[in-house]
Length: 267
Length: 282
Image: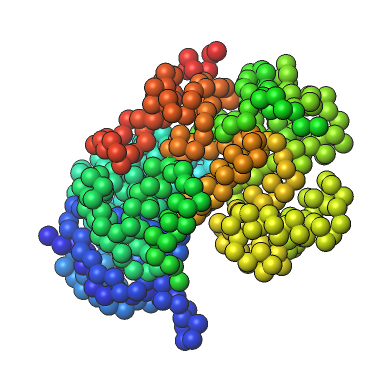
C-alpha cells in the first residue's frame, strides 16, 4: 500500500526574481512500513523535501498524497499529525528551559489530545527512558538520551510517518548504534513508515529499503538496499558517496582529477 | 635546526587535570605515545580527551588546566620547560594546528591572503612582497585555481572545502615538522573531504613530516592513517597499525568497530557498546 506519493514535487524559497528553486521536479512513492532514504551533499535539497512533506514549507508545486489523501498547501491538524519530524541536533531542537515532560506535553495541547499523562508515560517507555526523566531538563541528559526525547516527541501524536533528518549524525558511533536499533524496533512495533535523510550511505543501507541519491535538487538515481550492498549502483555519483562512507581512498594527483570529472558539475 | 631523527614528538605519561569546584577532573590520564614521520590517528568518542591531548602538546590548554608529564619532547625542545616566548616561536612555525570548522577558526575581518602571509611575516620576517608570493604559491599548492582572486576574499566568501584548504595552506606555509589536525574534515561533505585529505596526504609525504589526526570517524582514520591510538575516558586503551585495526584486542575498540554500520558487512542489529568499569582501572 502506498502511503506517500509525491509527483513532480518542486520546492522553492523566496519570492519574485530572487526566488530560488531548491527541489526541482522529483517524483517518488513510499510503501507503508518501508524506509525510504534521501542522501546527498549539503544544499542538495534533501531536508527541503522533508520540510515540504511535513508541512513546514508551503511553497511547493506538484502533488503530494499522504495516506490516501491529496494534501494541499493548507492542512488540518489531523493531516499534520500524520507525519512528525526528528531533527539532527538534539542540543538545539529541544527547549532548554522546559522539562522533558513539558516538551512532550506541548504537541498534546496543540492537538487537543486526552489522557495526557498516560500518553507521556507510554512514549517515554517506548523510547527506553525511565519515567522520572519527565522532571529533568535537557542539560541533565546526554546526547543519546536527548535524541530519544526528540523521537518521543515525534511519536507522541501517534503518527504513521516519521521524517528523520540526520537523526544520528551529531552522535558518537556507540550511541548511533543504540538509536539506529531503537528506530528499527519502533518501526516494527508501531508499524511506522520512515523517510530518512542522511549523508552517510552506511547508515542509510542499514535502515532503508530504497534510497534516492540527490544532487542539486534532483534525483540522480533511486537505488535499492540490495544494489548498495552488492555494489551494483548505476550512477557514478552514488559510487563516490559510497566510497566516502568507507573512508579515505588514496589517490594520486591523476586519480584526484578523475574523481572530479566523474562527479557531474554542480551548478 | 631540523632534527633528522625519526621521532618528532615523544610524550610520556602525560596527564591533564582541570580543578573544578567539585574536585579535580582528569581529562587525560597517563598518556604516552611517539610520533615519527607518519600519520598517527587519535580516535575516541566525545569527552575521551583526544582534543585536550592535541592542545596540551601545543600548550594551548586553558590557563586553569594542569599538565603533568614525565617527558614531552618535540625535536630539540622540551615542551615541559619551554618558556612562553619559545612556545610562540614553535606554534605555527614548527607545530601547526588545523581545526574542525574553517568558518570559526579563520579571522572574519581579515582577507584570506593577509591571514596566510601574516604567519610568514611574523615567523620569518620576510618582506610583504615575498610573503605575498609565497602565499600565492601555497594557495596554488592546495589546488586553489585562481589564487590571485582568492587572496583578496574574506572567509565568508569561500566555501567550506576551500576554507579548509586555506587553513591547510596557512599551516604549511611556515614549513612545520608536525601538524596536529583536530577533526579537519568533520564539517565537510564526502567528496570535498576526499580532496582535502588527498592534499594533506600529499603534503605530509612530500615534506616528510609528522601528522596527528584527531577524529571520531573509524573508517576515515583506518584508511587515512598509518597508526591509530584509541582513547577512552582520557586513557590510551590501545595503539595499533591502521591496517590491523580489524584485529584490535581491546573490548572497547572491538565494541566501536561492531557498532559501526557497514556497507560491506551488513547486519540486522548493531552491537551496542557495553562499557566495562575495568577499562578505567589501568
